Length: 78
Picture 1: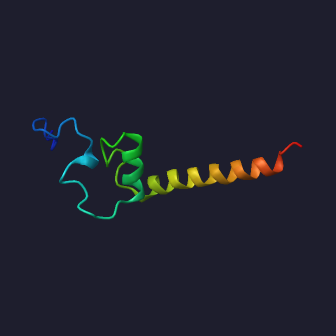
Picture 2: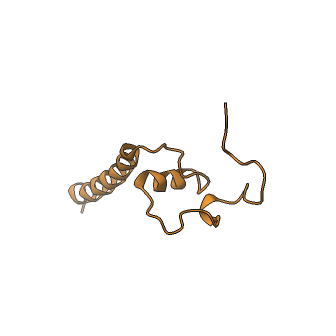
Picture 3: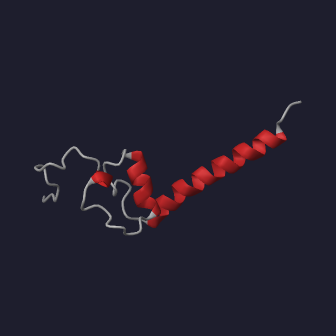
């Protein structure tokens, strides 16, 4: 088994978004953004590379916000 993780160097404990080799103004996918969110900016591929997982989490957040707004209007007690 071969790993490509570099256990040496100054960037070992620095979050990935603060490293100079990260992103270079490239567009992040939804999956990468959610991976960074869930891992505290430690890993951008924790959820894999599938677009479906990023869309799932985005849809879940949007549905939760819409449901909360509708619930506040429907069940508002005077």
